[in-house]
Length: 387
Image 1 (cartoon, rainbow, N blue to C red):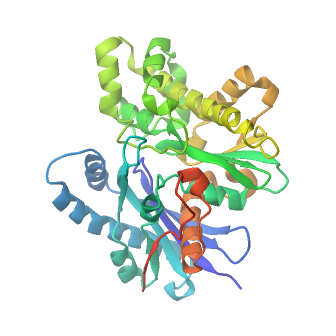
Image 2: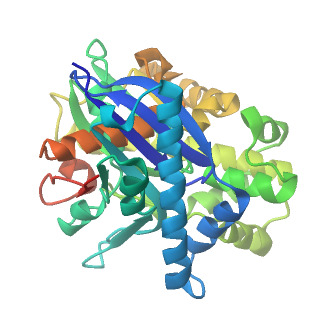
């Protein structure tokens, strides 16, 4: 008998709300239907403004929390219409919400915090479906980074016939999961994926994103700018680690350019693409080197990297990743592909994740993430808002 859950998320790029209908009755979740729900420009701007410190934040956050809760509820209801289902046929909704601030604990600080909005009370009330939300803060309470959460799901969907693989989520921020012999070896945010490129193309081309990376492809990588961008201390931090718009944002990029570089806009875009790709692949191999001594019996270089998220649609992004692997790590013979190969479209992995997390919460199952986030133990994540 099918166990139907809905997963909802709006990511760092704030491009839309992803809604996925997932059957969680088997060991491996099955995506049955999906819906991409628009976010109006005014709301996008309001979310982006809250992601950095500003004035009157509490009132602005309270209003936006309710507004986004309504949009998330609408996304779930539209998905039900598409799937021709009643709300009574859904066990629960898992809603990630919209992250507006993520301050993970640092080595020199005792604690951190994370904040997602999109009122779960509103979702439960408007959909008449039990809603699970607020997944990240329990992990932080146990001393973890509160991110990334995707590795637990990547482990669940990793193909059994591939001994060592990696999952790469290309949202505003990139996160990588290394799975070897069915176990999570490591998982963390590597740094920017699309976020900086999206901000740059919006400012200079008035486009939401660089379609297929065409603008980046037209430019030339500026090595001096690339070196300065890669000097950000986040890239040299050891895992567990997580990041977001708080670290990698347009004002940070512009301050580096204005202070030291004369470079055309297309070349900046090309350099940002190279920044994302190099730091991703370097993270894969640095993690392999760091863990090889500790886990020689289980760790192998991934033979395949399954890409998901909006960046998986960017052909130049995937070509650049493959080129870096071929030119710098040819002996590893890594193949870059997408999660289409394992039956879930790249755009829907994260929405499926939160449907799956809702089931884990209702089943009182801890999420196996302490070795990823650095938490003192695996936690039962999420708060339940009954219908």
